[in-house]
Amino acid sequence: MMPPPQSFGGGLPQMPKGDRADLLDKIKPEIAVDLVRHRLMGEELVDGMWKKVPALEKRALTQVGAWELSNMMLATATINTTISKLDNTEIKNRLLRISKTTQYLCVTNWTKYGIKNTSQLWFVHEVIFTNALVVLKQADGASIQELLKGTVTENRNINSGEPQNKGKLRRFLGI
Image 1 (tube, rainbow, N blue to C red):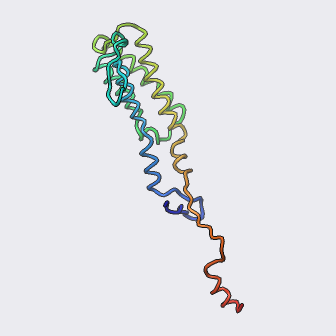
Image 2 (image 1 turned 30 degrees about the vertical axis):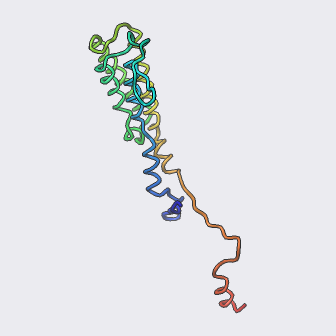
């Protein structure tokens, strides 16, 4: 059974802190980082185990490349970023810096990363950029903060019978 909403100063009921913590535990943008790292290495998840996909062997990045590039995503894919309040200018500037750094890393370390052609550069750019964009847009105008503030649980007890204090009221009124 959920505790009743708390109201402070006559305002809207507030979600109990435990429920907010549960919701925050469910927001895990960093999960995508590990998924992308394995995908960049040409692996897929089969029965709970990451396995190499033979058809992707020639297009897969090395472990070093996948690790360093997924770490670029980790810079934004955190709960701290998600619950922050960013404006559109901040988001665009951050995306530009992440994109430039990712491209610089790829060009500088192309042999170490296992990059064999320019299409891999574009692919890596799109993966990193898209993930960063989505996570940063969650922080646009503090939308996740607003979600947390706006989430309210209600616990109502409705009795169809007479009020319990009716006997006291009758005695007070002399009925």
